[in-house]
Image (tube, rainbow, N blue to C red; front, side, top):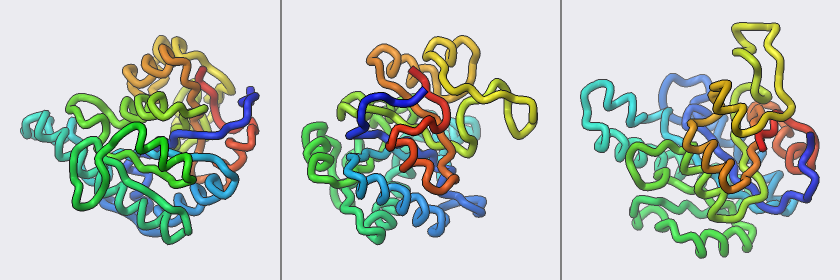
Length: 238
């Protein structure tokens, strides 16, 4: 099932772990450069792109809470980790020739802009990539939920979740070679079958606002460009 209408604006969700590469912690510059080249191809194709990135390669609030740190404090630390990742990705994008703005839900004005919806849309209209940092700015909400929220707020045609596999499977394709990939699945099926695409809040938000989601493999060169061209890449959730 392909996307019938032309895609003019997308929201790309990246996990913090996507920046790890071969590292155990932090940011692999080779990976950020590779992601930047994929995004540059999208911008060159005339598609406006917003990006939400996680912070799990540096800090994860829920994990910190499990070790004894107050959950709200841990989540705030996780938000700041996403700002660091956003700045690293901004640097990689600008080296790839893409004008980029980082907008944070938590005010860090010395290094990036505060998130203002209308300003974000204006940046997109000027063909600037916009990286949305610090999640929703609230504890207890994941960056998946932040991605759903931002996709809806900016009026994206499609939300894209980048993963290490080429879509949603009936089981873990690494552990089970007989696992079957879905071409298309509904929001309710994702929830009922516990397919672990994104957290339930994020899926429900997209369902209630009719925001389609594509799950695809970030590590296959050219997949993002194929996706925005309307090819049947990954799994569609709608």
